[in-house]
Structure formats: structure tokens, C-alpha cells
Image (cartoon, rainbow, N blue to C red; front, side):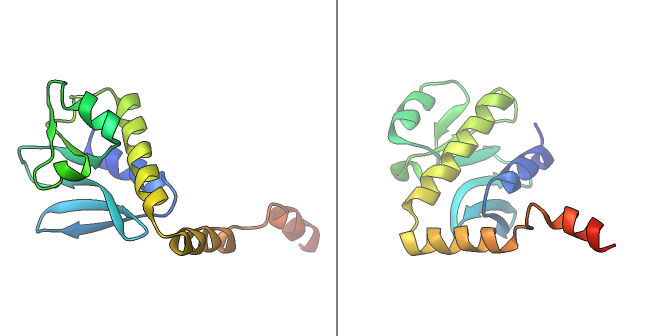
Length: 134
């Protein structure tokens, strides 16, 4: 897995935004709250992400996964390298991280994000309407 893969996957999750913070870290957020952080330059950890309390306890028992510096008390783990976990498991963990953070957003923020998504969707029959008009 590469940073390009990570970026593509995270940006495919609903309402995800990205931002460079703290010099050389790429931060993925939903509703302005971060759920994953990766270093763009070589560092001690490849990726840090939010997880549930149960997942946190299980993950930190595994080789190559540690409590994330400064964020462990909020159930964040730090994954040492791109090869620590299989791709499918990484996708699952990132999806869960996104869902955990989204669920903790204020209901008003969740509704605003959902409304924004539905207002930017193209109607299903738009293509058919264009063909008839043209």
C-alpha cells in the first residue's frame, strides 16, 4: 500500500476532506474532525487512525501496531509500516475510523453533510432527459 492508495481510499469515503497539518502530515477528516493521519516524510509510524475501545485493545497486542503518541487516550493506534496489515483489513479499519468519527459529530453537522451530498447528486434520469432533449 502506498500513500496514493491510502489517499484514494480515504477520499472515497463519504464527506472526507484532506489537509496538510503539522508540517508534513496528511490528515483525513470528516465534518472537520480527523480520523486518520499519515506522514508524508519517513517517520516512526506510517499511519495513525481512530478505533473503538475493543479494537484498540486488540490491535495494540499485534506486532507493528502501537498506541498513537498523544492520541492513545482517545483510542488511536499507530501503524508502523504499509506492510503491517493486509489491504482488506486496512480498508475495514479506515472505514470504521470514519464511521466512529462521523457518528460522534453533532446531529446538525451530520444532517448538513447528508444534505450537501444529496444536493450535489445528479438525478438518476438526467442522462435520459438529455438524450430526449438532444
